Image 1: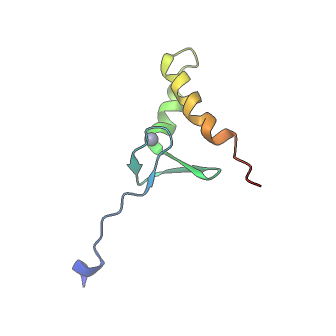
Image 2: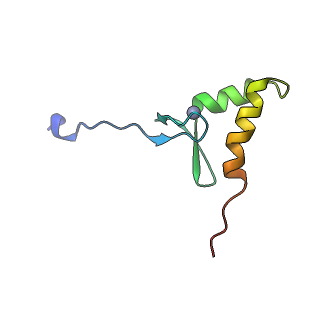
Length: 67
Ligand SMILES: [Zn+2]
């Protein structure tokens, strides 16, 4: 019984690192993994990595309007 219910579950694809992660938060319709969320919080705005996060986040902060 345990064998049949066992399945691999990788969660969702993170919008920042583009990897499949189990844990994270949802922002609009996208997903940010806990790792990236933590990284972003601890990254200084002057740090080069911050620009990367901003770039990735731009995809989600401007929701597409489909008509
Ligand atoms: Zn991530």
